[in-house]
Structures are given as structure tokens and as C-alpha cells.
Amino acid sequence: MADENNPERQTLIEYPCDFPIKIMGARVEGFAQAVVEVVLRHAPDFDAAAIEMRPSSKGNYLAVTCTFRAISQLQVDNLYRELTSHPMVKVVL
Image 1: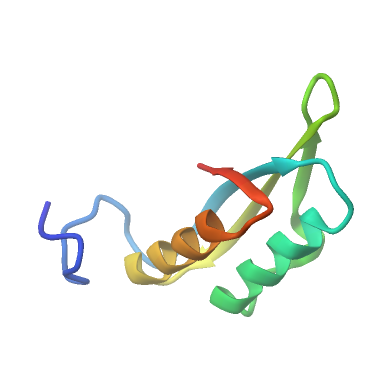
Image 2 (image 1 turned 90 degrees about the vertical axis):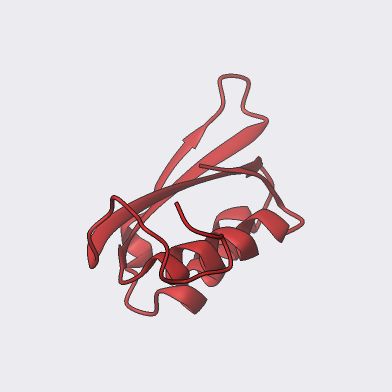
């Protein structure tokens, strides 16, 4: 794999493709909407109605899965970076 700053690095993913990303955070008002807003900034054709939400067993956390049409590794990397830096987000997979 090439340098992480090189957008031409090798990847096993063929683009475009449907790419699921799971975002976890505290189960608070506005969390899912905040996640959708970030995803839409990077994937404007994302269908927000297609998100999947699953609360943790104790109900304290919420996992939101967004499957979007990824067009490049750079797009996925930028989305991942913005999500992981969001104050409401705990984990991104």
C-alpha cells in the first residue's frame, strides 16, 4: 500500500460501489441527523431514508449504518475523517 497522502494508492475496492459505514455515538437527540448531514456533504446522492439504526443493549448508544455510493477512496477517506472528528461520534467502522 502506498503513502496515505497519495490518492493513487492501491485498494482492493472497485469504485463505484455501495459502501456501508457504521457510526456509533451516544443515543442523544440529533445524533442520527448530524451523521446524515455529514454523509450528505460527501455523498450528495445518499438516500437518508435508507439508514439503519440500532440501539445498544442498554440503550445508551446508537449505531447508525449508512450505505452510500462510493466513487473513490478519497471520498471514503474524507467522509471517515469528518465523521471521526465529529464531537457526537464515538466510533466509525
